[in-house]
Image (cartoon, rainbow, N blue to C red; front, side, top):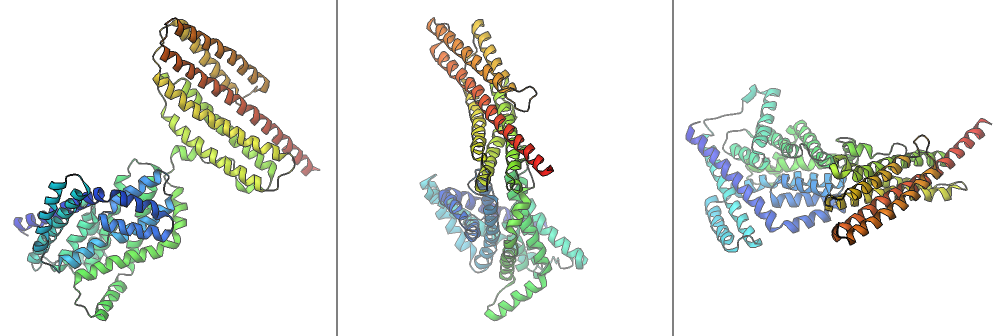
Length: 550
């Protein structure tokens, strides 16, 4: 291969990639809202998810763009992992559209006569309409034209070198040859980060006689598996949900590739029979396009019944610290049938909820030195645990509860509500503290520090697991804090009246101390009700143990 031919080949690949980029960017701009609407409405049924994934990928010509959008929907809570996986199935079918475009248009039409007018018309639209939808469609037309110019260059180049380069014996034949052609397909996609570009090269090389059709089919499988590298690279350091979506893409493509390799002789024979039955003069490019489509559809059919298992498998992987802590340690639906044990488990989980809420509150009150990254994670953990507590209480409510438990169960929800309020107030405290200016009056600074210290002290004592916890002592501390709050509020009003503090600053300070006073009150109430829940549960458990002994 001469340098001239190599340069022409690289230019053809460059034109193809540029055309793909322009088409993708233009379609995202022209049909962005429509594509988002399709994704939003694609989660109603699994089959709709597959069809939507195939449709969008066929339009955008980029499974990577669709995968990134899916990840965004999952992270936003608009789509669960199972729904995302069905769309991933569809994207793999949609990527086969590139093969069909090359097979049907690339080898049937005079590409220059088709591509050059498309580029000219597209540029007129783009320049005349600017960044509007029509302008974006002009960009799509330009990309479409450049796309097929690249195909034309590749086709001409491979036709010129087809007799000079033969790759049939690459790898020495047998299993080693199989690995070599798989590797070629994978590396082509990995290097260009586009399975569509890799497929275009494979198809045009096959049409030019450079690669035999059987070996080209193996390269197509490798390119299909290589398309997962884009998603894998994109989610490095990303959220657990993003990693799970990418992993589902890898699992699908790897399993589909393995099945296609195992059934390769049968699939090629089947396609040959179809060509004979249809009586069409079908060339190797069309055969490869059919092969690409059939083995992806086969992969969907094989993995469809296993989707729920894949979801369960992936949810146990890539678990973040907050997701791990957000898993209930004590709540188990198997103990619901034994109300005493279920109530004990509920009390223990609520104690965990209280620890997280108090941790958030302490961090917020001392946030003058900056909020810890743990603060945001704690909010995520608390919200998830609160949901699990609610679900567990509903399960208990539907079981046959003994007399007395009907009164205790609402207290469990009441405690969860108090701790959730502490978390919300902690966020409000951090927001308010960010608006405050440093205080200059030493007396006010001292009074504020003492007030904060009193609230933190209550938070420390509002732990039912702490040694020496006493309901009456905690209530007394809150009563003293309320007196302290009123004194501090009056002091702030006096200083605002005298002009020692700006009125806006005075209002912000009053709101701030009100929030942290309420945190202390919620913490005391949560501990008080949880203490009653724990005492009653322990008493019932001891009674049950005595009865079992007798």
